[in-house]
Image 1 (cartoon, rainbow, N blue to C red):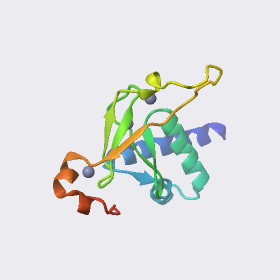
Image 2: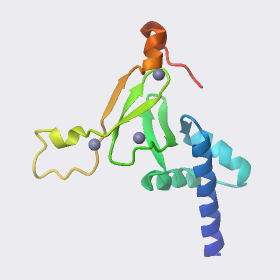
Image 3: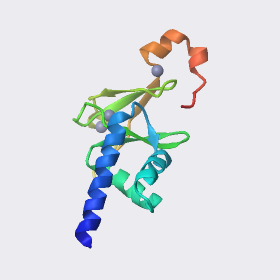
Image 4: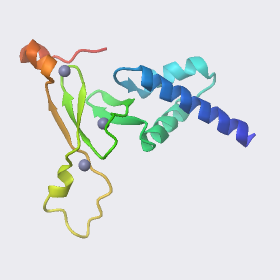
Length: 141
Ligand SMILES: [Zn+2]
Ligand SMILES: [Zn+2]
Ligand SMILES: [Zn+2]
């Protein structure tokens, strides 16, 4: 019972990894749930979300927080600790390996830092060429 359950979960993660590998962009947990629901009947949203969390912890997907919610995407090719430049128009991300955390002053010595976030927003080279006025309106996929 436990092992067939385990296999089922492994198979789901494999399907998930394939989905992200084939997707050139972001997926919300809902998108993933809709996709997985067609393949695995009776799958709960919680299970899908838990699998996404595990894939995130394993470094297979990256999680981004946008104004309209959390989205997931295949991990960048950059596998060292990195941060991102975000294009406000096309939502493309560019990884940067520089980490400002090493330079931040004023963190009390007795505060144990566990994680941090650092994001830079702007326009990528192709969106910049289109003109900023137009680029300022976010478009949905
Ligand atoms: Zn990344
Ligand atoms: Zn762009
Ligand atoms: Zn960092």
